[in-house]
Image (cartoon, rainbow, N blue to C red):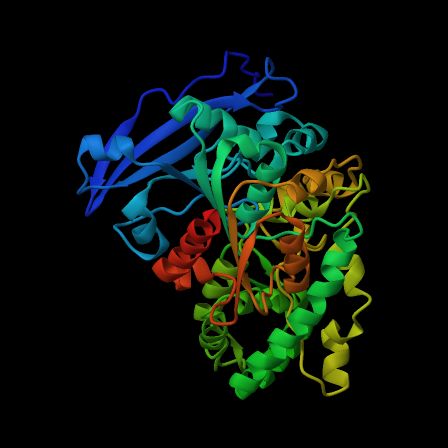
Length: 452
């Protein structure tokens, strides 16, 4: 088992600086407590990358305020920039940007099938991962902020789950915030909306998005039906060792939450079959691309921790998406074939069968089960403090967001004092990337206009 480090939490340490076209990048490493309630205990190492415009002088860079970017997820490392583009291009006009790999992701003491056995068995692994929710991420951010800039506050831009973290930040450490920008990241904070309720609103959105896709690309409906028939009769293993089952196929609906996702799904499906001497079979192209879409090798925490990001009432999440799916029989692909209905696709959900089908998750099966059984999840938001909020906040809410319920987001927006919204159907959930500079510019305008 890995020996715990109990050294005094360290600052950024040695900083490595490199240049890219139009960018100056600096690598930082920070040691922080695994459990912020036990700061003298074990430490884990976090990684963050500073990005500044290369054209600015050293004196100009030092005067710039900081913007912390929190990535969506859970379980995804921060963006890896190559030159100025998108939202980063706009941010660099006014800020020094810090791209944080949240704990367990990227280069921040990664947690996956290769590293987690160092903790011990499944019980030890699950206990370790119980410290990887938004409240711990916020405490990480506060330690980093103080080590980088002392008492000065910074701006936080949160994309999707990063926005959930930013709302937790507003709840428990608003003194560290100059302003907050949320992109598709307003969580449900009402105590009456539990994990089950989140998925009861999700499945109707998945159905709507699937039918809209079939209306755009009518041939895809027949292709998906053919794939279901094929997978019912044949065992197919993808290039990464993942078993392609009918429920796994249905998870292609995950793509429908992004601006170009419907088109990407169509191009994936049009290469599904190839003629062979034994009749039509899945093409190698399709199998390889499916492996890339479904793989959890790079972000196993997405499956292990997804439902815990909604848990606040102390109860076990108990595979909520799987249980709630039973309330929506239209998603039964076999019945859809028999009844001559469209096969519906699913989206951003985690299911216990994934622990058998997905190659990167099989070694973590019991760990995932223990996390699903875990009780005692504490609150992630302080609704009273949010109602008294004084930090300028702006949020873009996507009118028909697949991943984050729009009605829940609007209710939360009304619950945070002073929050200003931009509701749009011009972009999908990835609007901060697809809209780039223009989306961030609108959020910054809302914050600055709100200051008066």
